[in-house]
Length: 342
Image (tube, rainbow, N blue to C red; front, side, top):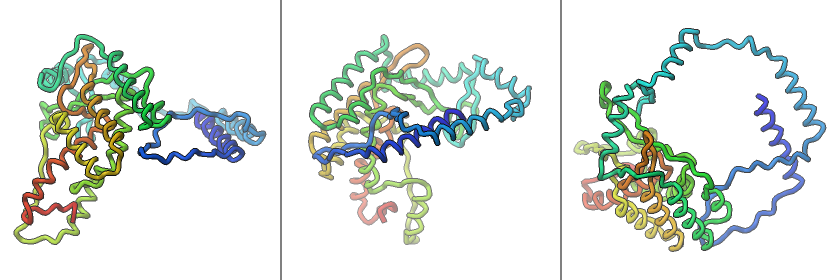
């Protein structure tokens, strides 16, 4: 509660400060499209702390101190707390959320690692590295961002946001697909890349690609969206509803074909300057070819496809599939009706 109180005090001070010192924003219009990405501000104009704010703070703190902490009851019994502690300390099991359905799954550590290595030993998709490649890859990303900033493709806020001084280490894990096999669930591989080398560049690329995804012929926002589209469809007796799925889509998208699909879509719309399109495509290539991660004390490089977990992965996959699907729908002529475009 004390932390929330300080945040509220800072908000009040910021409002007072900017009322007295309105920002004169520079005109940012130009040939390149920019995002709202920027580093989080920690500015706190303490000179704006008035007597009223100080009095309010003291009164709230007094009320907080009156709250007796010993009246707080735990919603777990002593035995339940003990059992949770034992599960946490048990090295023979792994607890993970289910891939779908919202369940919690307890796996033996042996089975979990067997599934992980079954995935990672696929040499067509993954390559085991001799050591930590972070420093070498950081040089590549820094050089790329420096060049983009010098050209003006990214502005000062974007540059500072994407250039990470101390990147985190991407970590590999997998989620059990109990909806396919409850006893021996296959794994869905995921790379957690929070604050990793490519995480913010991936976020930047995703923001620029999302508008193009929304305009694809087969774009469906969610389940409600497809139900609404079906209601608008004038169903005929000879119609057959057909859906399809791609096995391990993210890890099966070839790098060159995926980048070419994005390139074709961006160039057709003619809404971005060629230099920015080149920057986006080079950024995608940089992320895909330097998609490394850590698992069980070893480092790996994903040499094919896109990792589950990276920010721009859904947009990249959607644009790739849209480019693949469009000629098939056109070839079908009147025999194929895309319900999302009705």
